[in-house]
Image 1 (spheres, helix red, strand yellow):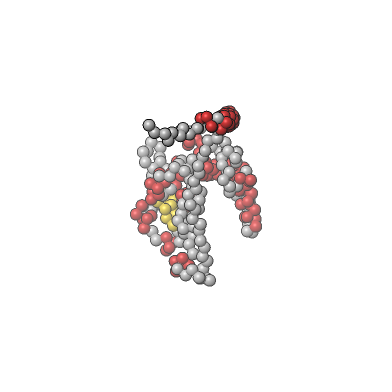
Image 2: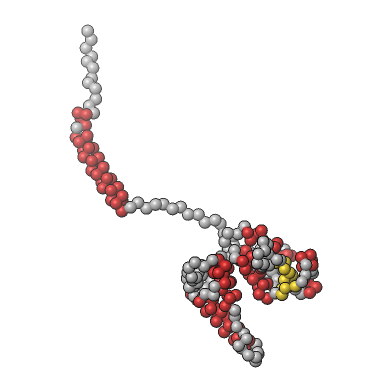
Length: 258
């Protein structure tokens, strides 16, 4: 699993992410795989180590990673992003934008948040935020700067026998900001106080595919070409040998007149 980390081969089949046959999308979303258990164990060990390094002296038994959450993130980011969990945690403002996506692009931009960046933002909001009793109007117009929190009006879960989900207001410490240097805002490209950088622009890559002939057709083509060459050489030899007969000029007319 480690050798595929952060590479184009970090796919379900390469990291051992397998599901039993016959599961519905909802069942697969909540099915705790062996890969999720392994990652949860690693995360538990890392968190406990950080806790001890930070000076913690309490019991470590209560510090454990939830395999259910890990398996949901694996399924959402690798198998199918359009699942009930992701749909419940995204904001209503992004609903139409998400419905237009047919796949997750893992390209990360430094200027505008990408689809995958927004998904991570909503996942962290869901896992670290708190539900409030704010109405939609209060949630959308609460000044986050005055309370050091951000408020997100999320779609929420669809209750049983309900046709539409129940939206809720979530208070979170997670912020989504542009990775933009103040030098770009000030147009001070020679600034020694703020960093500047450039981002590559990639042209579209094209390719032309040519079919390769079969081995039999290549042999037939070669033999036919050699045969035509030999016949042409023989024909030219005889034409050259009989050229005085085949290509003789017209007889000269007599100068005698009657």
